[in-house]
Length: 598
Ligand code: C2E
Ligand code: MG
Ligand code: MG
Image 1 (cartoon, rainbow, N blue to C red):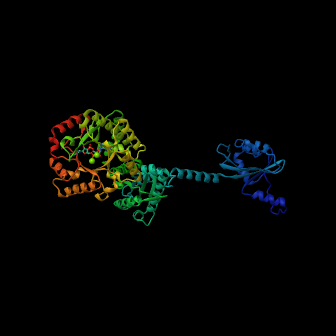
Image 2: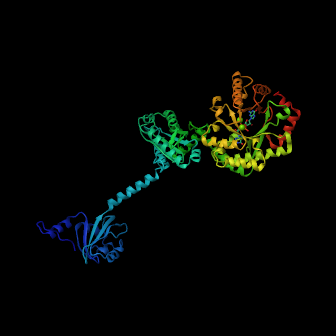
């Protein structure tokens, strides 16, 4: 039964109430406890009518039956004399019987008026529900596009922006863009040495620096005015999209600025953490016609890897020829697993001869182990082609372990077979990743013990950049030395350090790089450099080895300059294990091969 229209001059309270009910912008329906509708206001009629199965509003429960079967139970269970029975039930009306268009979401509250009557309060909650749903969807979308650690946009967000940028036709205003792929050079070491929470903090600080760089007023801010995004797309990987780049050449300045800003130390607690970055940059002009966001990111990544391979802390702009190199590296990576499993790796040994001792003992001063890969198709692959790949893909631990264990075993076999003619020192090259491997020192100790090899017979060769690493590397080097073995600084002169900081390296031997030795007999400058190195090394109690001696003249000069040992094709190329014995016997017996040094 509908409410009667109140008369304009109604004055008593019930009339006023009636007027209110009639005009109320919410639906009000008074029913019996069984749901029989006793009165409805126009709004509730409007809300309920479309749901009524037979076109008339007799019973509230019947009207809402399909949607809220528990309503009856709710009323039956409600024992209090009066009050709110249930508050703002949401009814989604997708499947409701509809005789006419109506709300999609209805909110309903039931109030028990007395022992025999209920008041239903109804409202159209469609708009509100839609708003909520949109808000939720937005939050979900934002969460799916946000990196939780740095609160930066993530890979999905970056991909969308790159896709949009790619869709602009050449010649469109703001058509050019650049994507900068950023990767920390030694993030794994920071995590290993200082813990993941420090690593996370460094990433957070990096994100702050990137954000502040992208803010206006900066070189970057002035160069590109719109469409920039800095995102974190994975572990220690960040990406900057410089959209609508006015002058593509500006990326060089931007790259320098990024290298400078991100390379400054990060203060985390008591730690000053240094973390250089390598950048790979893709310019719009370099993207292929069919490129999508993933290809662009891949290309930027390839350029970043090139920057890393060149020593890190630099940027490289992508060129299509890099694809080929990356594919070759990818191939090497896949095949290297097989190589390790199938025993395709082997070790060769290059004699290191004493330059200041009689030929009889000079030949057996030592050997350097050099790894080789006998590839089933490509033949023997030199280490410089696969060691860097092994370092990048995490296989260097296994490769290094193979070399060290093979060489220690071989060294002891020579001692047994050759007696006093056997080499006295075994030099093994180390990679950066080996030194930061947990348990490396224990592994070396174990190998020495299991082979019965005296520690002083082992020399580990490290490069300058490796020796100058952080505290964790330094600590590992000292632990290694504490085992009783010696350390050599390999390729000295090619790195960034100079004679004046040689004393900072905890090494016993300096190996002077071939690039100096090869000129030592023809260039005064090189001779002076070698001489100075020998003098400084000796004053620090270090011995010296001249690498890559190819001619008797070079051998004579380095000997005159005081080098203790020499190594090079003049004496011998690296030899398979089985050929070293005969070489040693021949060299000790005949001596002429070493006489060039005398
Ligand atoms: P390195 O440690 O400086 O080794 C010396 C390199 O110079 C060797 O190249 C050797 O064959 C070459 N060489 C020796 N004498 C002469 C000479 O008179 N003239 C010329 N032109 N070259 C000479 P190789 O075997 O190709 O090794 C290159 C580099 O690869 C090594 O340089 C070392 O840094 C790395 N490497 C080799 N084996 C291993 C390994 O087992 N582990 C690690 N981490 N690195 C290795
Ligand atoms: Mg070496
Ligand atoms: Mg060397």
